[in-house]
Image (tube, rainbow, N blue to C red):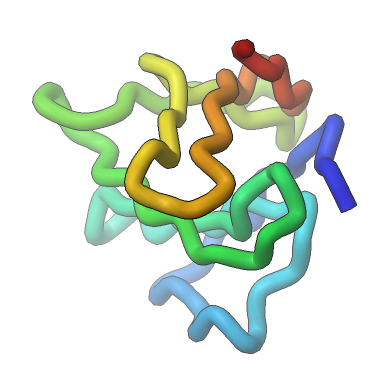
Length: 92
């Protein structure tokens, strides 16, 4: 199922893929890393490094924003989207 919204969950460690829920991005602040299941619904785990050379992260009222876009070009789905204030914005 395609995700249109996504919420932030803060955790000490990232959960294993089998324990992740669609529509949630898990943030391990201590390790500057985030993970979510691909928003296209394919079920692939997407890892994001939060640092000056990776993604920038902001959150407002539990609604995450990542910059730049998330391009899963190495996956069969080849999905490409932004996460902005908890909304998934699809790119063609």
